[in-house]
Image 1 (cartoon, rainbow, N blue to C red):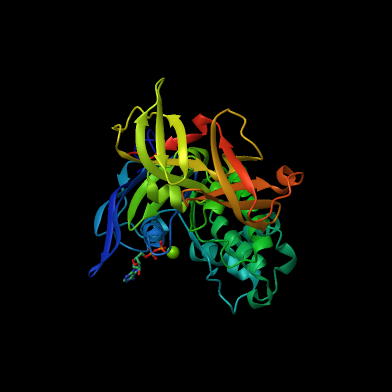
Image 2: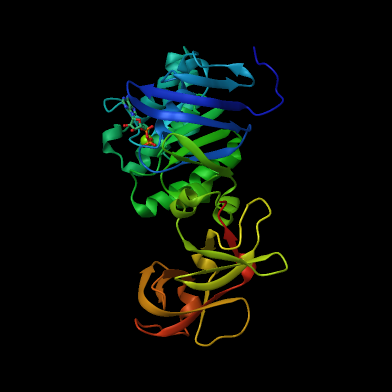
Length: 365
Ligand code: ADP
Ligand code: MG
């Protein structure tokens, strides 16, 4: 039975999982559209793997429902779900060759040997591991093993591929390559990918939509841009990184603006319609570190904060400048090396941090 094809492909509805007194997943709801690339992101222990295992059928929910095309599948066996799981540690059979590993699921399904071989070869070629077909998997690098695990899962031609931290065992340079390879595969195959990661850069680089979790609950669901530019709460704003959170006292500033005054100084930002922010109330303004510019003198436009350079941190072609305001607040600014190459900065320098008013937003009360 396929059920209705309208609505999301997969619905996670108030899903919960308890192990004795431990609540691994408290209350998780979200939908997945066919062909989407969804990232489940959150800190270690927040319930990502448990959620994925329940989708795969490797764990039974303690509460809530998982529906595939509208049909409850809570108790369906893994092989009935067309959703193989690719693990961080590959989970390959060390005694079998690459080809035998890739063929494994097909053999279980009872495909004749010749057809198994043909299909396995097709996927090995697709993933660039055909040259190692007869090698033992213990003679492969981490990146090659991950490709074998992917080929083994994809050879089953699933409707949905589940990936649990697929890149975290790889070296940093390989990780970035595999990341773009997963995006390419997803685009070419057109199937649904659900990928667990604790890395916001990975999630944001790959996924159409990101589900951010904390302590077994969903904190925000949205496109990477949406989440990055409009965090729904303090947890998300802090977890996605690269944000400045300025807390202070609110005051009306006319024309749909709200002024906030705190240890960082004074700034204006659009007054949110959906939040009961009162004059005199405590508010938190969020400004992304890469939206703040640096200058030597005031220009009179936008928000401008006087500060001193504390330190500079260089990572690749990007630099984070840590500043301290007169009131003792920390402020971080992210620039590319190019953007600051004509502005030499040293600890102790007095600078002006500035950003347009509409680049800041208030966290909901
Ligand atoms: P994540 O993948 O986000 O790091 P997990 O889903 O693995 O988190 O785990 C969520 C919580 O549930 C953790 O506190 C973990 O210790 C607990 N947990 C997971 N699996 C089990 C289990 N089989 N028995 C007991 N507790 C578990
Ligand atoms: Mg995990």
